Structure formats: C-alpha cells, structure tokens
Length: 475
Image (cartoon, rainbow, N blue to C red):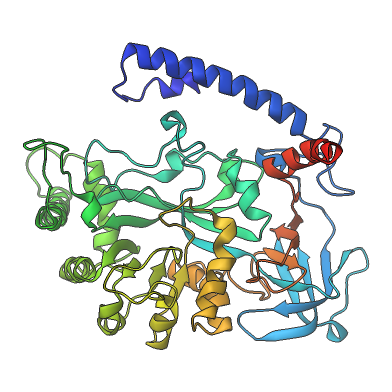
C-alpha cells in the first residue's frame, strides 16, 4: 500500500511525510493488533455447515443446498404483501415466492424459520462512497476525487474500489446488499460510477457493473475560488461551470465527427488520436447510459437540465435538496430523481420540514424517486432504511418508500430485471428482520446475497464482543 500511495502527488513537505508515515505505521500496528484480537479463529465457520471463510470481508463459498425461508411476512415490492409466505433460493437466484401452503420445499433444502419475521429484498443505496475511503482524516486512504482538473469522465471508480474495506460489512448486516459507488462531487464531471454487490469472493465478483453511469455536478461549491484575492482559477463562477460543461460536450461531438471521418476507406492523413476523455463521454452523448446530474438549489437544477436537454443526455437528477419551489418544473422534466440525504437542514427561506417532505412532494407529482445515504454528515448506508422511514413520517406512502430503497434505484440504473424485489428469476438478495425494515427498533437477523447466508459480523461487532465483557466487569 505504501508503494502505491507514494505514486500520488499530494504536495506534502518532507517533514509532513515523515510524520504521516510514522503515524500510519503506528496505526497499522494498532489496527493489526485489533484485527487479530477481533477476528474469529481460523477454524470458525461463517455459517453452520458452510466452508471456511474466504475472500474479502470473510465471505464464504456458496452452499450447494437450496435455501427455504418460510413462514415470514413477505414484502415482495412488486406484488404486495404475503403474510405467511415462503421464498426459495437456489443457485444464487429466487426460484419460488408465494404463500407457504402453495410452495413445496425441496427435500435437501436448508430451512430458515421466519415465523414472526419480515422478509424483503436487499436494499439498494443509490449513491455511496463505499470502497473509496477508509479513514476520512487520512488522505492516504482516500480516493474520493481527482482534484487536478474539473472534467474527468475517463476516471473509473472501479480502479480505486477497495473490496476489503471494513465499511462494507457494517452496511450489509443492516440489509444493504447493493449500492452505486460514485466519486465525490468536487468536480463538474467527476468520473464514472459502478454498481457493486456488498459480498463476493473477490473484488471482481463484487463489481457487478463498472461504468454504469456518469457522475456530473452543477453546484456552487464546485467553483474554484481561492482564499485570497487573485488566487481564483477557472471556473470561479456558475457561468464558468456551465460554459466549461458545454465546451466539453461540443469538443466531444467534434471528436466523434473526426473519428467517424478517419474511419472511412477514402480517408487520407493520419488516424484519429485516441483521447480517453472524449471516448468516455461518447456513450453518454449517444444516450446509451445515464448521467447522474447533481444540483441542490433551484437555479442550479434549471441550468443543469438546460445543458442536459441541449445535448440530449439521459438524466437522473440527484439531490435537488433545496429546490422545493421548483417541484412542478422538476416533474415536467420526466426524469427520475435521487434524493439524498434527507438528513439536511432547511434553508432560511424554506419550511422546517422542506427536506423531510421532499420525497413525498416529488412522488405526489409522479416523479420516480430513490433515496441515498449521502449527506452533509457522515454518510452511512446502514441508515438508508431510516431515511425512508423519515420520508414516510412526512407523507411518502409506505410502499413507495420501500420502492425508493429497492426497486426504483434498480430501474433507474437498468438492473431491475435482476434486483429490487422478491420475484422468481431475480438475484437471491433477501433480508430477514424481526420487524418493520423502516423502524430503527428493528434488528436484521440474517442477510442473503446470491443465496448465501452472509456472516452477520463486522469490525464493530468484533470489537463489541471483545470489550463488552470488560465493561460489564467494571460495573
């Protein structure tokens, strides 16, 4: 890791580097000691009867037997609620869903009694930074954004995705099975998102779709304004941000024309030079993939959508947190919207409940919404169901709240044929909980990803189990 990090030009002084290296060395030793103390013995199995843990985050090899989850209350998302239902998971897929009385369990199946429990599809977080940052205060463990320029469509989060991050087990044991990993919104065009599954034998198995969407932003915080007069650089205004985006797309169109001309048999002259920046933008200009366009305030949303319409981009609007005076216009765009985070304070000219009621107001106008865990304070995917719960408390229908964290994001990113509901043929990502998934008092009992009962442990549970007996002795 140290050799890899040494390649990045962070601009530190020699003294700062020495101090950072010493701190990192001490931290690694401490982390190693904690990890050795907290980790289960090597002979411990992730699940009873399963092979020994392998791969990132103590993942386990899939069991050969089918799994039958029976007797639970099924929240299917697409075809209502089944009070006493059964779900069969086999070969990584859902092979049966319905009332328990109508489904026959295979003879060799592993049975999970879910009587008194709630069973629902794995949750889908529409925007995260999972695998891009480990310790926020340590920039050596952060790959959130490339700050040397503002336009970076050729950047791919899969190139920085760290599958062994301790954050993933923390999120998945609360029911999050899939997520969009996106670069930080510090650039106008920050790079290309990836769809991940929060479980797999290695990073390649966890990355389901690289380059699934383009992360774009039009927000006042992107302006390159210096701390002293004369230190600003372009773009230092929203006008500059808009002109920079337009010029980038015009240059890409010109690049496409030159590339097409160079491919003709009668072309004379040198072949077209490959430019990674323009190559990355081509599928988005053709409308083949969605652009996730982030904007917070009304004027930002309007300018962002004018640029998107000008170049016929396939848009998923993101955030729109402080655009409550523009909701009818947003609905007229006929594009889906990711709302995140719901844990944000209203502006001085907004109602106290403006952010909490935003999902309900958008849904009431016919806008398809998804929720994400990102926000101004410590984004955490495990809080995703509670964000949906807040939205329900402020007017969003319960069924729509469940869709906003399951099926809707799957539809927005084109994977609803595989994820987002309890339907036959879909990936066997299923959660068993002891109550309402949107209630903070509910505890997730077991999560299945591709039909595998994942270890319900994380670094936090390991440390809890190690140190809780000591605190009890002190009482």
